[in-house]
Amino acid sequence: MRVRGELVSAAGLLLGVGVVAAAQVTNGGDLKTLAQPTAMFVVFGGTAAALVVSFPWSSLRRALAAAFRAFASSASAPDVLVPTFIRFAQKSRRDGLMALEGEIDSTVDGFLARALSVTVSGLPADLIRQTLEIDSRSSSDRDEEMAEVFEAAAGYSPTLGIVGAVIGLMGVMRHLSSAGGLGGGIAAAFVATIYGVGAANLIFLPIATRLRVRARVEALRRELMIDGILALHDRLHPTLLEERLTGFLRSAPDSRQANAA
Image (cartoon, rainbow, N blue to C red):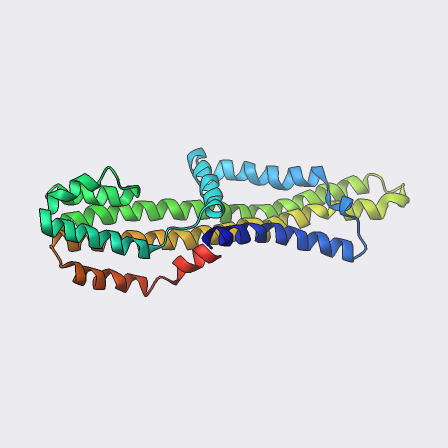
């Protein structure tokens, strides 16, 4: 079900492009008119150049990788963590908190492994919370930067579309004596504007929004893990721990949206 949701979301991007192409055909136009390599080069090449100037290369690589993951895999729902923490609570009450050290190597989630490592190190609860909250804020900042990359692209591409249109019109103006091709030349010039505005609203902004939705889910997961780790540190009964962590899930509609979107 979640895989199907990811495919539907990815198909949404293609649908947006298809709507523009269908409108062109319905209006009596030719799809070949939209195929303008120069306009594509100005809009997408110029946007890429602006992003390279605006962001470090490492941030751009992370943003591209995050965009791919956003459509290639579903977000991990916070509710799957509750049974894990109940098992941790039962094990720590039976064998002691240090028994959780054996769970670190088998834990796939990097933040959870870090949280378990800090917990079994014997640090006081307030220092554990402070350490994990710093890690969580750092992760949130990285997630926000990834979304900002695509938001910046959405800001650059329409302006570069106008630049491409002006360049095209300048080419038309140089051949005013050939009136026969004037209309087609003007139409081709404005394709760059379609590229710029279309890319911003059908590709870049939707990706930025999706990254933010997933970032909120991941932030909630980290909050749940921090609270769960502190509950383990306080030797909270598994039943009370379950009730405590379930409260996080009541405020997590985005986790379902991210998986079904």
